[in-house]
Image (cartoon, rainbow over all chains, first blue to last red; front, side, top):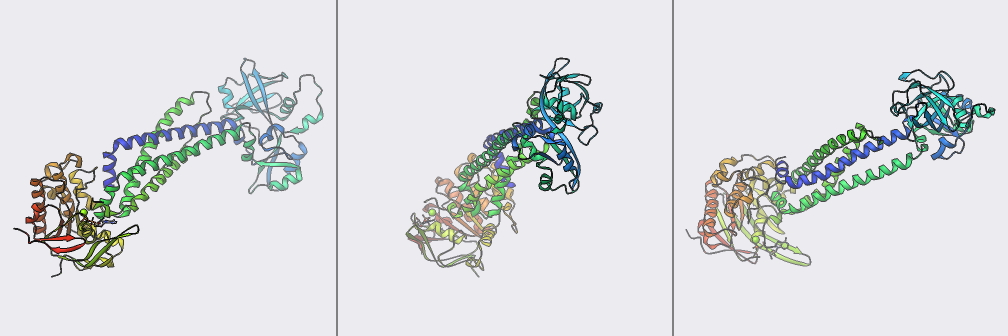
Length: 375
Length: 227
Ligand SMILES: Nc1ncnc2c1ncn2[C@@H]1O[C@H](COP(=O)(O)OP(=O)(O)O)[C@@H](O)[C@H]1O
Ligand SMILES: [Mg+2]
């Protein structure tokens, strides 16, 4: 610490410059993390909050559009309910609709069709639970968008009217639109585009998007259940990929984050390489005077750790402040401690690794070069 | 009594690619505690190589080096580092101070490397070399002579048995050179340090107890020291 502390003070200009770079990277990390979490929330929070372990879709449905393409019958639900390891299995409907309230708020919705009183039927924070046809319980975010208890949602183009009876406590969104829970037959009619006075085929009331399965203990054997029910199962998490745009968005952000990690390791590594090369003569002297390799390596790594920790802390501070400003815009952005801590931890670890690669040079400095001057 | 520093039949061959340079050729040297020995000789004669071998920076190709009773050849690298830290002091050509450190911290530095049995007080030592008024200055704020004085204090703070000094006056004017070598002689005599000083500067030899000459790796007795 003796030497590291004094060198940090002495070369504070250089270290500050490097610190600014690391702080900016950390700031970017925080913003990316906020954007990732925000996009995930927007894309799949409605799915995340389903009390479900797996979903059984139509056999052979494509993975990235399962929610919009899959159709399964009520028979499949019954089959799944009989599988060992299944606590409950219920029909689940999911379709995107355009709506307008009677107070002229335009809103796109993900209609989730569920059985009344079933395990999917949510408990609202405000208003009442679903009690019958033509009723909806909507996401907290729909409330923020101007939808309130007592409003009537008019689905376009069919003109189906649905009354909002409850508001959920949290954000429930799917594919960047707000979730509205409705009773299953209401969902089935909306999906089929039934208008008032239409004669509705019986099969409409037999078709749902998927079987929602809640396992008990170790859970069901998905392959066996699929064989019995003629379905294709995905775990809840696998089904996120079927949310529109979800895979593309998350993989893009992950790529950017990966690049940032690599960049920060390289930048810090390069900085300490230059610093070490500049200090070669000094290091030779220190070794000649009896400084062990451990002392010198510890000293250098402490400097890098200090630099990384302090400047990432500054970056995180700036990021959180920026996040608060962004939070009030419609941008999908949400700061969560865990992903930020992971990203910053990785940033520091990779930075120290980069510095360590430079510090290896210290071990190669020959103390003999401290003497002479004629070579 | 055993000499504080003893080299027996020491040969050092530097291999530089295909070329092999014999920097030291069967050198014998014994320096007693409290003695300041000067080594003169032309550039490239092997003077720095002599200090490197004596100070455990380079192992001899053949022959043996003893610090007191300890044979350096028997020691692993870690032990050699510890031995340098505790028992050897180096003073380099241009001071070679650490740019980030104040004069006082330069002197404290060797005591941070590890345990030292009976160190001298850094502030007191700095006063003794006449640098207490620049205790808070960094090397770039010091003159060449001042840097050498701080370098000498840094070399002495661990109370070394052996002090190895490489051309301490190369960058100094006449007056400063006299003062620096006087200081070295005084410290060697008063603190019983076995000191070897390499120099080009014949004007400072009268401060030394013995003068040896190095020519092509061979160490020979030169003209007796004046005064
Ligand atoms: N690390 C080295 N590798 C190869 N040759 C060296 C090395 N160090 C010194 N030499 C050679 O050894 C000889 C003695 O060098 P040195 O001890 O530095 O002489 P001096 O200090 O008397 O000028 C010179 O010929 C020099 O070129
Ligand atoms: Mg030399």
